[in-house]
Image (cartoon, rainbow, N blue to C red; front, top):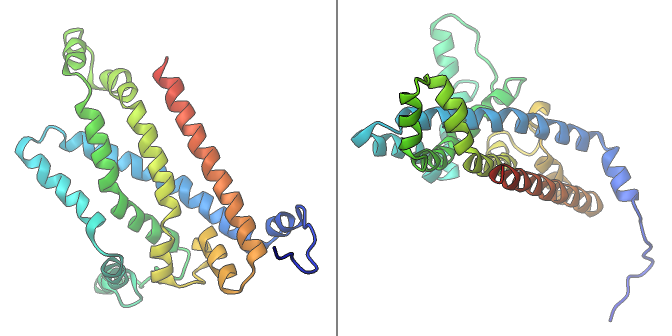
Length: 247
């Protein structure tokens, strides 16, 4: 069995060095900000869309299919489409030029976060929509009929029937949205490269760049902290779901 030559126990020095790294702090801050914006926005829009199309009858499958199309589009084709939309000479800036407005460098400015939010919602809204539709279809219609007989308005039934009955599926949607927010790195990397605008420099950029520079202590420390954070978030959400289901 081989033994490491000249090795010594590093203790917590790798983690201290990691937490003091400006690049790590920037990536952590941007990742938290993006998650805090993208997850609630995606959940609200998908829930609203699900409630709008759940009673559309024969047109319901068509709308569901439209929302699911982004899930089956290859990443390369999707990135090509968004680059045509948001590049310096892209479709949106051409419209701005037609109406006399100055173009925006969407992919390399403070608007890069907005661009990323649009892409994230466009890609993930359909998946959450299907989950919310399944939750809405499992709510007994008798609940709404009884509330209508008692004179309850739409806001009351939404607050007292729909939201409580959707709580288990909402926790699942929240968990999947958090996980998907960490997977947005692929689109950012393909659109903006390994060193994007500082507003969209994510933890995945930090780890990817340290991998290429062979800085494995920082890479493994960052990956370990990220794994612990994901376990804690997952456990907390599942605990919340179990607690709510027993009340």
